[in-house]
Image 1 (cartoon, helix red, strand yellow):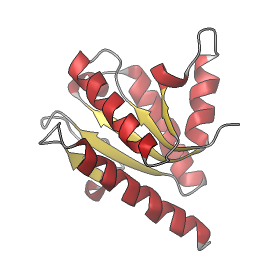
Image 2 (cartoon, rainbow, N blue to C red):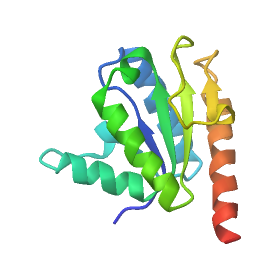
Image 3 (tube, rainbow, N blue to C red):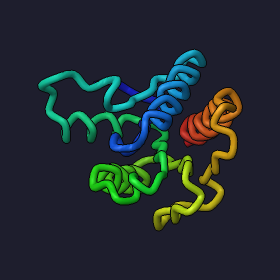
Image 4 (tube, rainbow, N blue to C red):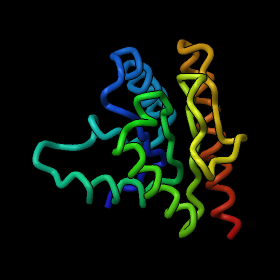
Length: 145
């Protein structure tokens, strides 16, 4: 089983700018030696989709939901968020929301402290630093258990 520091949940129906942001963020985090799961980057053709997603989420410290209007309407993002909520109850997984569309409502059960509103899509370094900080906090909590 692969172990990931971060599972990125997003709508694949979004425009190319969002895919570029997600890819740039994933690369910035990988340069910081984090193990990142992004479906279109990790899944291989012919892989069982649901079991692969479930396994990746269950082995991640942090779930990052990229919140857009299309993500709110996506059955896949909703499914992934439900799985991540269950993982929060089972272990010390944490969900972080990256809100790209300011008009989107934060999903139920998410603390407002766990929402990052993107005002500058070009500050990938600053965003990656915030995520690394959250992952370090989670790791320290787990070590203290």
